[in-house]
Length: 147
Image 1 (tube, one colour):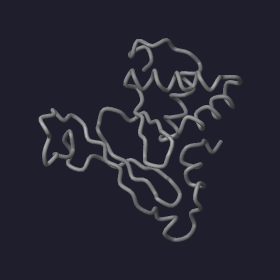
Image 2 (cartoon, rainbow, N blue to C red):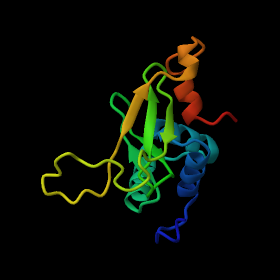
Image 3 (cartoon, rainbow, N blue to C red):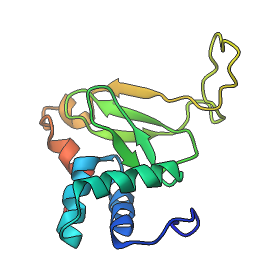
Image 4 (cartoon, rainbow, N blue to C red):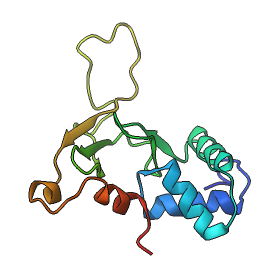
């Protein structure tokens, strides 16, 4: 992936990609913590630089749900959407509502050539509805490795 995007292959970049493969929707703090656990000393700035370079190269997608830090994922180019639990913060992917880009047709495009729509659905996940979810616990499980 890195070579295909004409980026140098480095251990920190590979570690970031591997983490996001296993745990989509991770935030930068989680990425930093896990990469440091795997590789030792890696600066916070290096992680932000890696996330920025991978996003700019089109290898990552950055999403920013309201009230949440930016999250990163490997699923790019398909214009899928996200569902966020209002209680615990868990984020899951939702395929495009209509199946074609840009998924939504604006009632007035104001002359823009629309090529993408970002939709975030909000609700309460099954675990929180039944009382077994605790705010933050599922987010941590969704973004941090279990190993």
